[in-house]
Amino acid sequence: MVIKKRTLLLVSLLIALTIIGYINHSITKQALLETTSEYERYENKKLEDVFMDDSKIVETSADYTKNENEEVVDSKDNAISSISNKIESKIEENIIKEENRKSNNYFVEYRLSRDKLRANLVERLNDIVNNEKTDEETRKKAQEEIMRIGNISEKELLIEGLIKAKGFEDALVFLKDNSVRVIVSADVLNEQDVIKILEIVKSETNLEPSAIKIMKKY
Image (cartoon, rainbow, N blue to C red; front, side):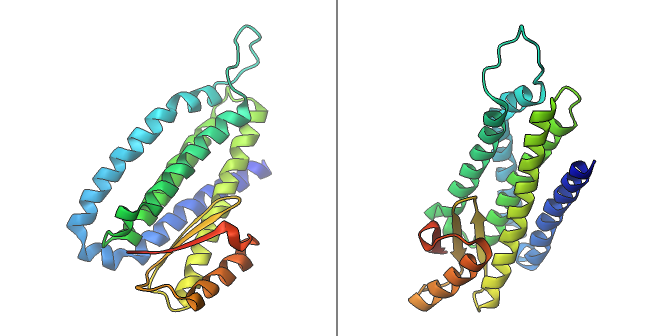
């Protein structure tokens, strides 16, 4: 019961973080409404494509039973990890691609992209948790993944705020368990700027400098 409550709280937090990120950039989005609307239609299509590929994995995870006559192709842990790893790779690819970083709406578009992909992932993990056919081991793994995603999303928002407080116009952070990508709005990134960002990220994540990649928007 406690785990379920924590899961619901973290799902609510993730949704709230997405809404907060959206509101924080509403003025910019309003000024560029037509462009952003086209982007959202494009992004929704990409979401459908990504999760179409993963649907079989999700169904396999949700329908795990102890039927001895049915061969299990993949382990429960691998099924959950496969979904998360694919989404993380997609988010990172979108964020760091040079042509994407040239977009005038970069921080609005790819913050929304990151949060949408995560929200859809959490929704599908929640389906696994709530499926009565899911065994306890799989349910626990899915709940742990939901909590991990919620914690990461909260930390990303915190780091972005701290970086902007140092004088940067905007920042986008993508955090994984063992690495982080930071993209900032700056014409030039000098050594002092990099040191400022490194100190913030290290203090919030305990990651080594070699695991922290800092880039500027073109």
